[in-house]
Length: 154
Image 1 (tube, one colour):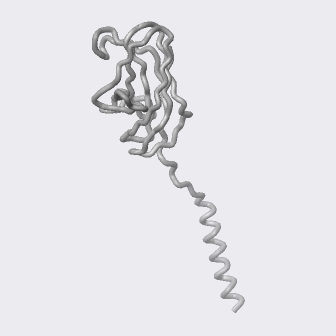
Image 2 (cartoon, helix red, strand yellow):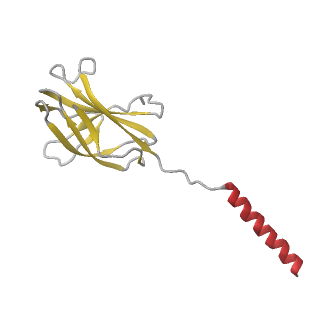
Image 3 (cartoon, one colour):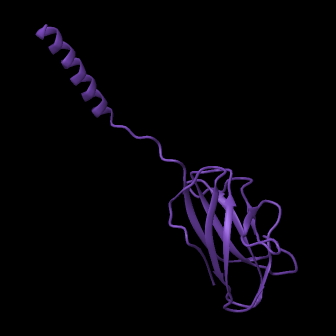
């Protein structure tokens, strides 16, 4: 009855890079399940157009994110499923949410289906280059003083 990843938040992520992780989920009862993902800003506001399914093609060794398709799993109570995933996302500095959904009918329907569990991972952009302005000013002052001293010595 849980969904989780082996990622430790925050994860350093660059747009277009492959985000590799293991996704694990356990279901509470017999039924058909699927996984949805979505991206959120730092205030947990949904980013329009970012909804995606998790797709494991037949014969594939890993699942990936797809804006057009998703895999369905027919599972029995307490079944645990583990997926190797390789996602490529078009945003960074966002929160990725993954949702384990139980189908109520014959097809996925956000209006009818039930969210069983969710997990989030913060995808941090590349760290900005930090510098200490005080140190730079000190270097300039020292170099300037050396220049003055050289003039005095001559």
